Image (cartoon, rainbow, N blue to C red):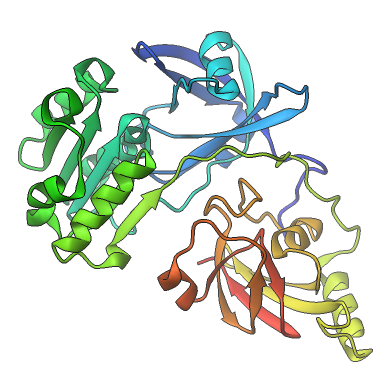
Length: 365
């Protein structure tokens, strides 16, 4: 079983460089300490959750997607765009400089392709280009598929990564097509106007990130030209209201003792209705068996048992803790990211899942 430091999962990252991308967007090049380096391996499209000082003096959590690629050898890089009245984004852009340190959770998120060898359709608006660029660079460097990227912005001055996109297109002319949509020239990217541009790529897996109206328009356009819903993946921006960094104190019992305690509770007649059930969780090639109290979300039960389960928001607003029920039944307290197709396939959010049956089997694979 992986050990977890009591009370926190954050690691310190040094700011190596600050890059001004546009007038209101900065990129931070980050370096973990040698002892934390293995915790910051990541998949294209994932994000970091930074621990920032909040306006009320308490820690504030903000999630920023990685614009770097794990397949190019480049260092970690996140990009932060100022939001009017946004405490976190303005603090990062105004206060952090090269040489500073910032705390962060390990990379998380499921907005990532299953294969880099498939042809991909990517669509982004504004700072939504960040995870999309990571996917594009990874596909070009680590896969064999072709990539089409539709990128919408207000005008030319608001195009983030303009030079990097130009260089990528010049380096991979047969595999990368970048289509810029500027509202100042082409108007709003409505679904009816996007359909014709996206129709030739409707059979591709699509990854969409940006403002909600743009993502809605892209999804509507793709569905209108026959794209199946399960091939359309959306990444949402969100702000977290609670402190996601503190974790329950690890139970002193060993894994075997936890299993023994669970079995004793069940033999004594315990059921979820009486307050305790059993979770069998497959994660990273290991199976953990632990007591799962009825009123405790699965994620908290795992963390308490010392299992290094992935998570980020703990509010049901991201997909970092997504897992799948393979036996038994659960209910979720809150869900803002999984759609009906996900639910039908058994996917749940560990941070919101409560047991409804005596035993529940879960997999993170």
